[in-house]
Length: 352
Image 1 (cartoon, rainbow, N blue to C red):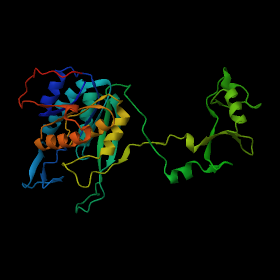
Image 2 (cartoon, rainbow, N blue to C red):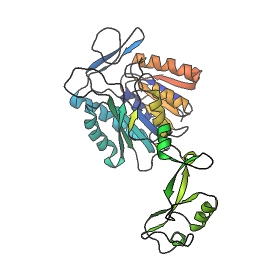
Image 3 (cartoon, rainbow, N blue to C red):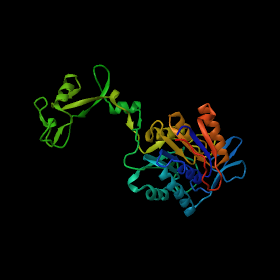
Image 4 (spheres, helix red, strand yellow):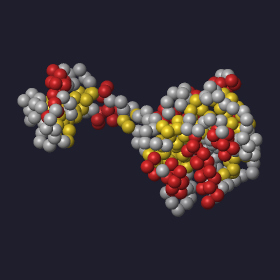
């Protein structure tokens, strides 16, 4: 794929176009934020997006009026095509509302397979609101994360430790003022053969355990002052804060929506960057077929990924073009296609 691609089209037509232009099994990452079956009309008025609206004022960005089985059928048709586009090492993240997420989880299991389910990610989207309803204040939506196979692209995401984390996790300080903790140098399971069952400083591993590493390396660590001996002569390895890569990211994310979105339901750019960094590599193709204001495309551009965006909203395409041209500097950094609104196979080919 020589250029990025922005498509103005009903996305079923756009996905069919990609399948007929040699993109099958070529997409490493799909992020979609489809309608949530809210029965709302989303508008833009005086440059400001309305994220929840049934008003008839303002320019309509899109309508979200599919309900029940019609909504499930709508998503299933698109998910089936997305699966065909996804590479064997690919991942899909589907962003959905908590009210219908349980139904979409069943659908995703059917399309991608239960064995390829990775996470149900809770995304904190806002501060608590004072809606007067009999129920707990909602501050979350969810992201369903699936892969095409058991060997997806995975770049382990980490968060830096906070000052509180550092104090708690690395409570000891050496004579140079460096913070550390200690970890065992043995692990469960006895070995009767091999180096990890041999003596270290005249000691065998505790009963039912083995040394984590060759005793030769343990001796080297000890000479370097990296083994700490307790009063009971129990050896433990020093682990310094500087060696830590940070903490693993959990399945609860705090990425709030923009306070003043330029497009309805615009999503947090940092959240999209996390997804893209984790589940794609440089020059991977990232696809968003509900691309809205182009946030997924913007994040992909910044991170050196190829991208394809599809949307049928005139407002979405206008805003995406404007944002992308500011980011890419040159119009020729991406191709723009305006496909017919009937399901036809275009003869124009895209080089990949």
